[in-house]
Length: 283
Image 1 (cartoon, rainbow, N blue to C red):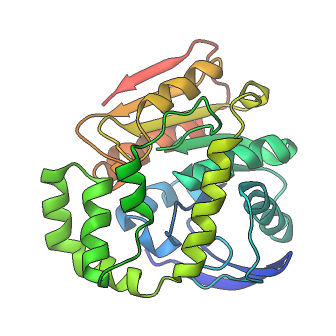
Image 2: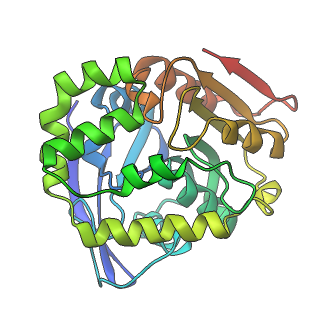
């Protein structure tokens, strides 16, 4: 199934590029740090698109989206998302965010609550001092843009996967990741990193209980970028939240478990009424 690229949508000081695939309930998909819609595992997106109208956004300044070069915070990226949904004429959507995209999804769910059907949070945290952060060394490697594109790709893959898994991903996809890194703007990545820093100073941890929609939280048990302990913290804040922990997997666990995770998300989105008791799964 091919992703059809659609025109950009004008927002405050930017043009947001997006694509759509599939039919069904609308599901907005939000990317992580330095990522674009082209970086998602295709089999994972295809799985979601088998049951949903998947709308993939590229954050301002990246992946075909433009912006005014000004600094931004997570709340502004959430507002960008709201403007796209409004322009598309969609009243309510489910929102899925990975990593930094999970920050945006949470901010969106709080600031634009009337537009949210369900929330899917992958490898993310609620920010603020309550969040468990990556080590200084891991964070430094994540935002490091030095070296050749291949060196950057290798560094990234060994951050988002356990070492033995990263070996196979680097052999198979290292050149693809390197090509993507070569296209990235260092200046844009610095602005994204600043927005994430601000999130970890403030965040929405103290407001998280205000989220009233069904929430699915999933993480890899060996995530070193956003420690998996954050998933349990998020789940404990939301009565009835689904929590799924994927063994021997890292920050990009959706590429390790594309079919299983896709089926889990589809099941979650298809259920009309969530049970009052929290569901926890280790897969």
